Image (cartoon, rainbow, N blue to C red; front, side, top):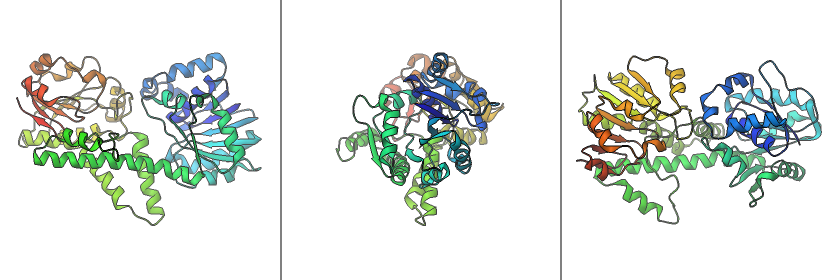
Length: 429
């Protein structure tokens, strides 16, 4: 099939590469806000496993054409228009669809893979004209494993009100539907709301677990026992029950705000969602508060090592990442920060510039430890899971480890002569 992909989101890049890899003739037209030259130099796209290699492979094989900033989508006869825009581009989306509709065949289908407010696919369908059809395909990609989640999906959440459109989308994605049936079809508006509701539920579980971790801290209870007990209940399960120092990311955070907007626009204000968002912002300062308590508020001149800045392992993005809130709190108290991350250093430099209280490292994580009064684990990169403990203890002057993801065994850390403070967990030498 001839496919025109428009957008500069991860969903657009992944769809372009994946569809071309199975023989479709794909033209990818990145949005002017982030053209190909910008995307190809971006750390987040380069760090996404397999994706750049697959894009280059598609271009070499002739199945994929990537348009540059001075090119416009040309030609006609496209059977699919795949739209993957950011929520901020919602107003522009209708104009884009109207402009490109003349390049589509009369039987073409619009696949709206953008996270827009409920009902936006209906409005985009009206811009197509000539009775062309539109479907809402929820963006369920996971950053850090986008290629895997697209090409080996556990499911496709398809919002579709037309059998012919469903048949066409099934044919488009047939190569990724061989292992088992992965399509879950529902009306368009229901699919749009379901996408937002899923992330709202996941965020609620995380925030609730963080609240329990705070209570465990107060009561002197190890929250790991509580987590295991809750997860063993088949009505609850273990997924998204890991307490931590807050969640971030461009998609997750935006989807929650989008759900809040939908609630407000409907006249049904959600006190629960407000609490979830407030708890998460509060948790981003958890490690700072533990540091403050340990040093009784006397932080000026202290040195803190931070391991991890990306909002999750496997990506270079720092959008809404807990580390940003943490850095502001530390700098306000005159704390000097030595920060290591294997992928997100360039993103930090672009976001923060040169700061007199910040040193950045992307080589050996232990470099950041020299002279530090505390180590804060913020992102659970695999490289941090099993450090050389005697070496770490000898370099960490303050002997304080603040584990924002509960990845370490408190007893083992304490046996190394370190004071351990996690999220609802603690141990002393």
